[in-house]
Length: 417
Image (cartoon, rainbow, N blue to C red; front, top):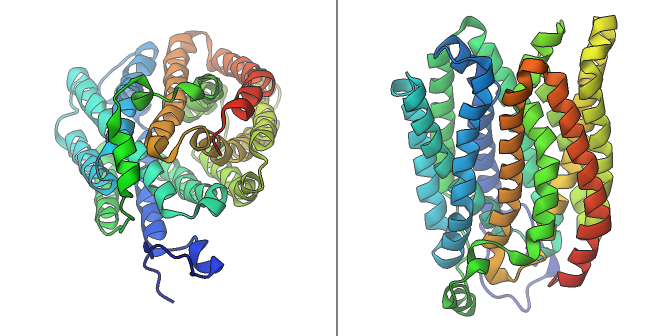
């Protein structure tokens, strides 16, 4: 059976043909996404060490410098969504991927001072924001709508696999302070991803869909107004996640853990992968808001463990090592449950002609929370990272209450499908 996507109208096609998920375009987008995320996660836990050891930046400034990347991503998201709704999505995807790849060349030759590092990170953020917004929409275009939750779950697994191996690989490479090798590996990875992205075949927009997407330019073209409550919840959810991915390796070193800090991300990714294998199917059965609520509740246990890590380590490093990995597992399983359901929630709030805009709004909420987590972590690090994780715990608890009592009602009243 051919794996090439059949884009013809098929009123007489068998159901299994229309609902087939594992087509060649879907596989290629997933693999390209894995390589994008792998190159990204190579740098997430290692750039704080690069700033301190190579550029001589003080610990209190690390968060501010890292957050400029997220600010750039945040600024480009709404425009990327609008462009991806209007112009051929595949072309936007290819251009964004090329710019993302070019940015990695800069780390090898231009990130030698704080100023050039900031400029490069802003450029990299623009490219990453455009790429992930378009890719997230492109994969929805390719998969059958009846298996959207499941398809987004497996698509997310690729990102989670990258999260499992990226930080661990990056921390292993810089164990000898070889940052040049780190950037070279990241560049090679993203070049391979670009080659796969070029090979993706996608369905063309229907004429009536293209007409709707270009007819009116308004605020809703850049930001999904009906998604604002869900976007606020997403911001709050993302704060502890941003703190964790950016500072957990440094936090583990601070409290004196004896395990490889990079393994935290491997365990966390395992939880993300396992949860996505079934959470997407629950979404396809209609349990969207219920799945999100359960995921947030599970993630709370992980953030509680992170918050208590310092106090436990002061009494027993061995017990703290166990808590360290238990927190990673709960974090991974909880957030892995949340992601495909939240993505589907935003898509279900928008017509097909606003699909990329819905994804851009979803990812914007995520970016704001991640950026705030990075910035706050750096600002509060002088008092110990346990304070940052305690604030993250508070944010996630508020997000759970807000989602259950406000967002769920708003979604049921405004959903279009």
